[in-house]
Amino acid sequence: MKKADRRGRTDAVSTQISAFQANSAFVWPERLDLPEDEEKARKALQIADEVYATRAPGDWRPSDASLIAEYSLVTADLEALQIQLSNMGYFSRSYGRGGKQIVVPSPLVDVAHRLSGRRSKLAGVLSLTSTAGLGDPRTIAKNGQLHRDANPQTQIEGVIRIEDLLK
Image (cartoon, rainbow, N blue to C red; front, side, top):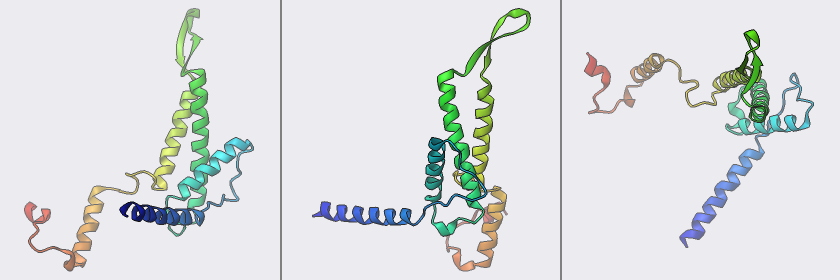
């Protein structure tokens, strides 16, 4: 009996998730062109849909569509570059002074590093990382204090506050 209830509950949750995701299709911004390569365009659209589905459609700002599109393009490029680097190798041989053969990093390593940094910045702007949007701890503490001062009913009796200990 419990298994049937659990399955029914799981089915209900799955149905709600499916309904939510069906209503949250990402619309590619007109000002950004999709790549001509069909595989890369498909991958970019898939990434954009996955990012867009992380929140309710109403939680996204209108300007976020361009950022999501750029994030998905950078991510698709980075994935393709990682495959290429894995196949070619991260180092190559070159000739240095005096004709001596030396090992140097592949020029694609720098490109991958820059794309990775760009993707991290876009993820921070879109608050896709757990640390993004947290801001300065002093600002958070100050805002919390302002909230407590404005709403004294939120303070719990008998709890020692850190501010009282520091006085």
